[in-house]
Length: 396
Image (cartoon, rainbow, N blue to C red; front, side, top):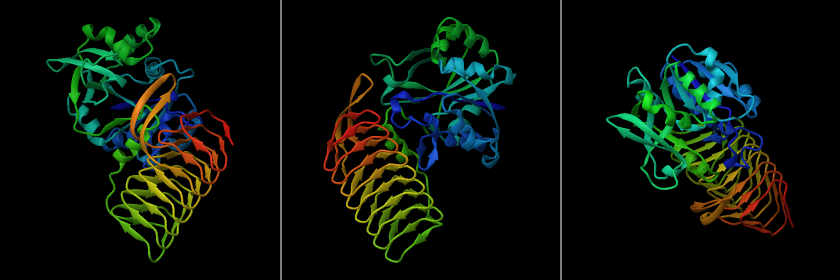
């Protein structure tokens, strides 16, 4: 059986982290989101995978290649313009002649989620799950085990069973998708909403993992969810006087200096310099080439590649993108915050700071809970930042 993975979208609501990468390539637990999907398929013996790519497709294609290092065979279909998921799916029409699995590439899933769908048997099926925030997704109405309606992003509560974007479909679905696109329906759920009375689609509940990131602060939650490590794996150098508790992974060429305290699950990439006397608390992931200076605390955060963090800094539930340079004494706490994304405001509990790539932050800066700092910004000595800074902003 083939799998079609939709990975062409940008992820506008996740900016600044999609300025130079598609959403599917945001690292979670030091792996791109899309890698979790590929590995879940491979674990179920699905090794013929078509990735539909578009926005910054080179980032995906250079990382996954032909799929050999993941034990699969990957081919690509191009969606030249990002005109919705239904339009993206039509890009593989000529490559699929039998029943297939379709998966959204921008969600973290595990092998059990795919196994549950495969275990359902033949025929059209949709994997569904419960959500505490159904208004962000397509809410599914089920009667007698059959999907009878999908309401995309409802304004009022109409249920909490949602569509995961994982389907088992026959090739005849492309006829429905084409008619839907011609009628101006760009999303797969919009197309299905119109044709559900004519087709039989079963709802399959899963005991596996499925989680999506819609807004920047969701990435921290995904990072917590993704950790399933056991034991310690240390390819780098651990100096005497380091305390490591729980599952901790340290990549090749990294050095953890004396006096550091690391409580897992924590993943540290390759070529990092940590400490001395740095504290890293659970569900933090540190990318490759990261330098964290002494007496700094990292708590439940994502630090991406080639980031430098000065001494005596405190960072909680933050996401810091590639290439950022942070001077000494940064205070970036987490807490209740009112956060604006596009034209909407959200009340977010335990919100940390979000910092875009190649931003430079001077000494003694305070980033308020929920602050979103765009890419390539410059924040001067002693500044206090709250709200949202656009890309390339300068704060003096």
